[in-house]
Every structure is written in C-alpha cells, then in structure tokens.
Image (cartoon, rainbow, N blue to C red; front, side, top):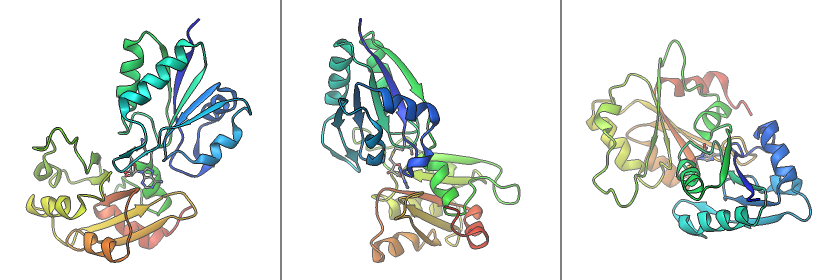
Length: 247
Ligand code: SAH
C-alpha cells in the first residue's frame, strides 16, 4: 500500500499557532519533510523514530531543489510511509504547496491538505494591524514581491494595485522593496501612505518597522531588517499606533 501525504500548514512561527489537526499529524508521521519557515520546535513532537528531512527554503536559497523535494516525498510515499510535508504559514499561500500537491496527484499518491494560519494575516495581526477595517480598508490583496525568475516581465499590475482602495500585503517583498514601493507611487498612491514591515511576526524576535511608501526601503536597510517579513501598505497600518504589539 502506498503511503499518504499531508501538506500541513505550520503557522507563522509561534508554535501555538499550528492547528490541532496539524499537530496530531506531526505526532504520528513516519516522515516529516520541513521548510526553514516552519518552527523547528514542532519537530520535538515527532515520534522518536520519525525520519526528519530538512529541505529548507528561504529567500531563494534552496537546500534541495523543488523537483528534489517532490522526488523525496514520492519515494517515501511509495515505500508506504505516512508523510507530513510541513510548510510555513498556510501550504497554499505562496510557497508552492499547490505545485507539490499537483505533482503528488500526478504520481497517483493520496494527498491531503491541512490549512494553516498564514503569515500574510497573522504577522500584521501580531503587530496590531488588522488587514481589513471598516474605517480604512474594505478589501485586501495578497501579492508576491518576487515573481518567478523565468517571468522577468512580470504579470503583476502594480498600477492597478495602487488603485484598489484596500490594503496591500506583500510576501517575499524585501528583495524588491524599493522598486515595488515606487511602482505603487507611480500608480498614483501618495508617497506618504503608511507602510509596515513585520519581520518574523508572532515569534519572540518579531520586529516592526513603520514608515511610508517613499521611505520604508531606506529605513529597513538602515535598521538591517530583511526577510522573512510581511509588508503591509495602507491606512490600516495606522492602527498599530492604537493597538500596539498584540502577541
Ligand atoms: N505559506 C507561507 C508563505 C510562504 S512565502 C504563509 O502562508 O505564511 C515566504 C514568505 O512568507 C516570506 O518571504 C515572508 O514574506 C512570509 N513569512 C513567513 N513567515 C513569516 C513571519 N513569521 N513573519 C513575517 N513574514 C513571514
């Protein structure tokens, strides 16, 4: 009998923010294949005989290439094992969980998903920034700051994004921060629009940098704040002043 694969969201970092279902699966897995963004303390809950495989991916540094990750999972599943593929945040919010699920389906392996608490919502929340609010933002857009390298022309219409009237939440946004902020200004947003960068949200090392579209990149550079971080653009950022740190 081939094994089954569970794509499990590990949550944004705080170990308490994995789901009950996710933790149950971590406790009984034969194999756990995990990313760098998943809190390593979760692995303390694995069975002592479980095989733990680090395929750490962060900011373009891949210990194992994506095809390699899929091959490892497929091989383990064919050997009849129960596999937890532990991914930071929610498995289907960026991070290529959808692609992994497709590959497993193609290989005729049973795959399940256990959604997680995404950093896209949780990191701002922990910094006192609700991504929607009746007074500030009736909608929110989640966008990657870093399109795939094989599509240099880009499919994201930053000008349109500048005109949604809602909050913009950018993941993987630190490498191209200055460029993307100026695209929003070119699209018509005020250079004074508030921006927050939340680094390692929900963890003890959470850092929040507050500024504006025309200054946030410089401020992050001078304070040496980089990935992993969520960038939040829009009026909701001002709520941080009222709500503060909500960890
Ligand atoms: N599936 C993940 C996102 C994977 S893409 C999720 O749902 O959260 C990786 C990006 O997630 C990082 O570049 C960063 O933008 C964001 N990220 C993940 N964990 C984070 C955290 N604790 N604090 C801030 N940003 C985080």
